Amino acid sequence: MNTVPKLHGFPNSPHEVIVAFIDAMNAWEISCVERARKLRGTDSTEALWGPFREELLSIHALYLTSRKRVYAEQVTFQKPPKYDSSKESVISSSIEGKTAVVQTRRVMLLGGGRYEYKLKLIDSFWKIDTVKRLVNDQWKPHIL
Image (cartoon, rainbow, N blue to C red; front, side, top):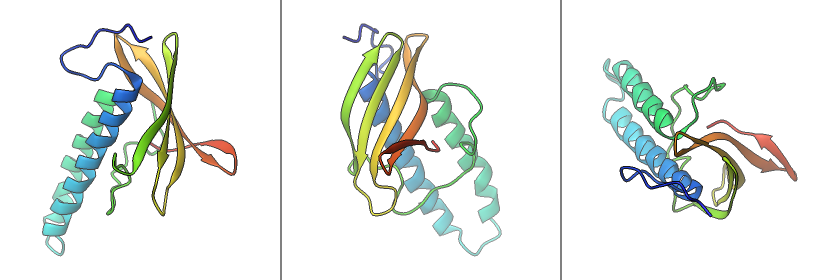
């Protein structure tokens, strides 16, 4: 059982953290697509990349462990969004000490399938450390 106290409304279970992260990334992707579309063909498009990156890094600071991640800081978004809680649901969750594993299933044409998020308990908060995707019956590292 998770005994971590709920702090300031932040999700306190690994399951809740994954859902909140997916929702935050979904909102960010939708916002990026809309802002980029409005400025398509103008000289202002380049000015958006800095704010897009800052917003992404603030989501990562809130939900991910702080460590170097290959490609994680690159601004990539798509339509339809890669992250969407209406298309990705938690199918299992377990906690062992200060480590948790949450498995999800994405129902999407591209990027669909099973994912496994590993979380660490850091200063009373569950933070996502890694994610893997099941490919040909093997868990392969995946980019957050």
